[in-house]
Image (tube, rainbow, N blue to C red; front, side, top):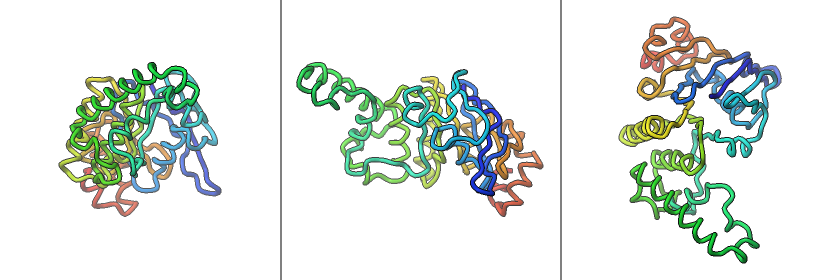
Length: 260
């Protein structure tokens, strides 16, 4: 579904990503792991249209999307979340969901005057959809809470909910487990699995929690020093000397031990 073909990116003399190629298959939950500084976030930013590649090509469903800005990718069904959630802190959880759908007629002053009944119907539909998302994520009890008051894990669930308010086909998840307690992490993982299984969402996940990667992802791609060094199931990668060396060589022996 997402094809990454020969992508490279340098910042001055630093080669952040070098000739990376892999495919995120439709209907998969594909993992992207590697030690700090491996180039994972840079690659995500390229795919998400935040920065252009120096070389290479990105395709979505066979169509070239290289260099398209995030708002255009949003309308094509490719969305991303961030390691640090970007909620509207002074709006309620429900309001954070309701502002997501594009093309709302109430945003136009002229439409507000001329098509009020249609706007009311659209608002009711968006409200229904938002409440459905809240129920799906089991955070309906937080609907009227200010988003800024949520815990880190609750904000990650809200971030996932915002992707559900779009017509997303492919979602880039940037460290969904970061800063999330184990209870909420289990709920978040379950929501991702259900979205994949029941609604056909395709995910690509950057994550440092190897237990979460092992639960969710197959296949898993491994980057180190800007390059793709291995791919396969977590079971296979746990025995791969290249993967172990990449983590151990970066001073991440504890992390490598957890994944091995």
